[in-house]
Length: 174
Image 1: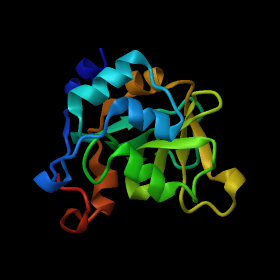
Image 2 (image 1 turned 30 degrees about the horizontal axis):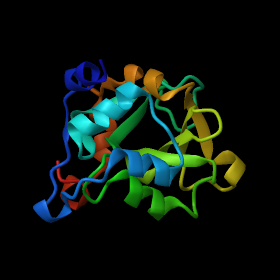
Image 3 (image 1 turned 120 degrees about the vertical axis):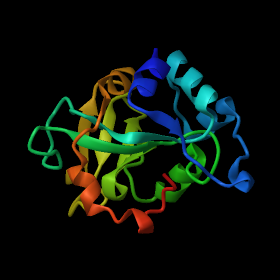
Image 4 (image 1 turned 90 degrees about the vertical axis):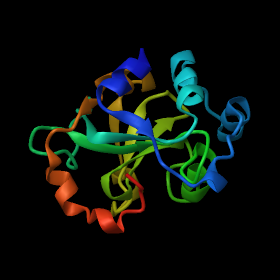
């Protein structure tokens, strides 16, 4: 079911050089990160292997509207980290280990480098704002669980957030 949801909004594997295509073992990745995902999300990670980007963008409406949402209550999703490449789950979590709360695991990225995280405590999905002034104001709940988060994703027809990004200087290869 996840694949149908993501396919309907233009999901595809992030293009990366062949040298970055070493695929991490899913079970070893989950063990190292100290998390577990639903059976369906594990299948999705195996299917795509690499990180997932969206041809027309992706957005979601968080359960609790944050100050980072647009005027309609939506926030954008740039990428879901996968099992291979520069944007794999292990590399991204190592990169953010000392920045995000210790009970969080990054699973994706919003616009501008903010991270989408899953809580190791309760499985809820959070948005981590990397420019927050204090740690207690850095995370905002998005969804009660990963499955609901994936099902909430929609195609982002409003490209206003993309206007703020100079695509020629973006580190993603769309």
